[in-house]
Length: 260
Length: 251
Image (cartoon, rainbow over all chains, first blue to last red; front, side, top):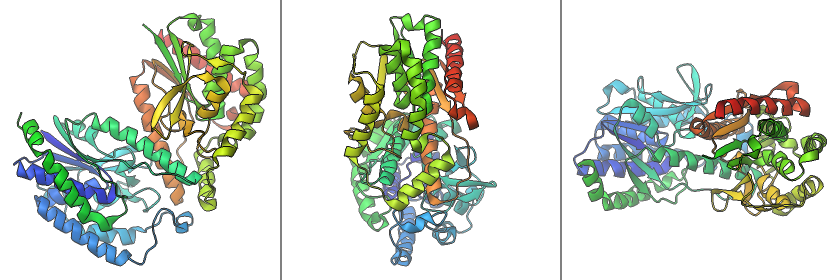
């Protein structure tokens, strides 16, 4: 059973579509896909439509619409709004994005098995969602801490799956995948000038340790060197195009690996 | 076969780890040639004192206890909601990291309490610190005061010194055969954006700690709450009992 794990990372998630494109070019289909945050968006879109091309089209169109609406908004994270609200963006706004992408589609309608990973605030553990409405699961998986309001799944508030499972390889293993392919990218460790930024830098280092551990479970990794901030969705096209070049460079190696 | 004991060190209550050393000493574990004790952050203080000033290390630490709680005020009463408030304040103030004052403050502390000795590579104690510039954990040797200045800074109250911060605030606990750590994370109800950031980052530390403890032969966690946090005798006794338990499990 071939499992594909897609990393969390905002706009960098567009690179996963390049991974899926190379899967298609090699006539290989993952049996199960796991994803956190942006990885869950791409995973859900691909699992729903069964085509990397449609997955790209739907994701890109939704991003374009969302960017138009957000043009007047300030930059998240370092906005003072953050200190007086639960989180910067309300769910009402954020929900629209996923509603547009997934409507009322359910996991049961997917062409490929999908594991969406979120972070359970009560138990401090990753929580795998593989049933119900896609929109609820993907929204839960994308609630970046400190940026978006947490949402409820099974009566529990959930945050971004990238908190503890940035590349959900262990979840694939638990599901029964015996060949694990990871789609990952370079982790940017942000610089710091304030104590708050220092906290974020330290947090990014912790994430990189967790990622290293998850990648140790992967049998093959598509690795994308992307130096783009996760929030910079205006660069989605550039991210995808560059990723496609990188993915095609390792296409033969991947094909040899998967056909061994 | 070597024996590697590792300690956490994210809060000043690890000064009580002198209790563990007494337990190891009683059972003559400290006489083993193959023993290595790995520490990070605050647990390095009792280890250095016990190694180089053994006879009066307990009394130095019990005197230091009161001052440490004022000096390291951001984490002297460790509770996630309180740290959440501090982080909110840091965010509101946009407080700049001051590299010079961090070194100076820590220098004052270590010059008062730590002997001016050299930590050698062959010593049993191994002091961990995290090099943020190189993004890697390192074991430091050399002058004990200088080593501690690099091993102690934690992000709420201090800037990194020469790019180093407390390893326990990044990777949690060094790997080891036997591990002792204080488990002080109590679930809390996040309210503000900064609370969610805090919860996420501590959940990550918790997951890194879990990975290290799963690899270890034995782990003893010390749960502290309420007034137990303020009494040095009580805390060091908890470490003593934890040490005895660890010896039983490990040897």
